[in-house]
Image 1: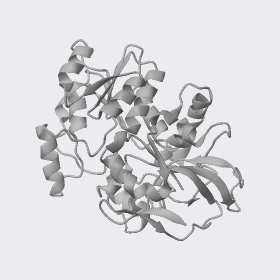
Image 2 (image 1 turned 90 degrees about the vertical axis):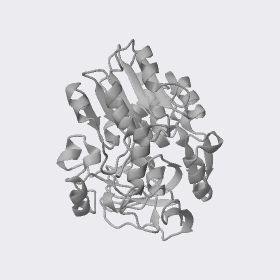
Image 3 (image 1 turned 45 degrees about the vertical axis):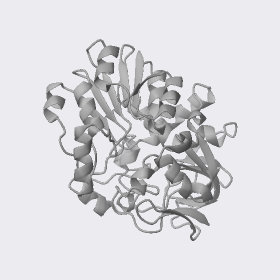
Image 4 (image 1 turned 120 degrees about the vertical axis):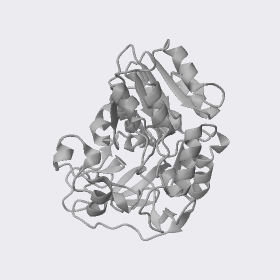
Length: 389
């Protein structure tokens, strides 16, 4: 089969690789109809995530048709159309029973390695390094899905791929980020980053009834898309973020802040961003934390910081004194996709939201390596790329 494979920093290749096979009676094989490039894939592309190996198949947003099932698979049959969550879940461990699916205790095949890094391993993830299990990703013609009875979302044939594909990651990620804010009708919700996840944070905060939603970025196409979804845009290249937020909240600060950027945040003229880039280049710091620092500074006392943006390791200069003295709550985590998916399918089917709004480019899988560069460089108005195997 054909797949997109990682071979080092800024090196994704379209290659022929062996077809996946049933390895466990609980497996299924999916014939991929659509997949996507995610913002967190760029962390692999830039080689900020450890434990990648040359030839690893990347990608964790994908869907398709079931073409083969193992002998112990009971809920799926050949021909079923499914979206596959990026988190692999057994459905039986203590965390899965609690609905904490991204913390599944059984699906990470490299649990001992992850335990050393994180204290306790999270779930296995598709196409996202050997630290998360070393599973082949979904930017491919076919994918093996472990624990297939639990690791799938069955979708109606009345909805297109473009409407449901993002149920596997960015839609529930934006939704969880907003839900974690405990949004009240009087709240101002501010979202740092207007990439694909930020776009779904905007629409989720609007659906959940925030009084006003603000988004911060410097890419005009992204800001326009967020504004069309109900957000007030702030271009940090053209105006003061702090001054504008003071104005919008009458000097009180926003109640709820969402970091939809993660470890690669950078504002060129900001001294702390320069500091982070230097330390990161010298391998003295893993992640860049400008957004975290700014959220802690501007958030109203007693407010909530929600962090869907991906972080990989250590960050410096976090203002813990401000965080503690302002009594801020921090909520984070990889997305518990299956906790939200049934409700989100219903909302799509009811017409409350059409997730296809975020797609700006749809190309063949063969064009994937080129589109990684287009997406990374934000060229041609690129916000979200869908790939067709």
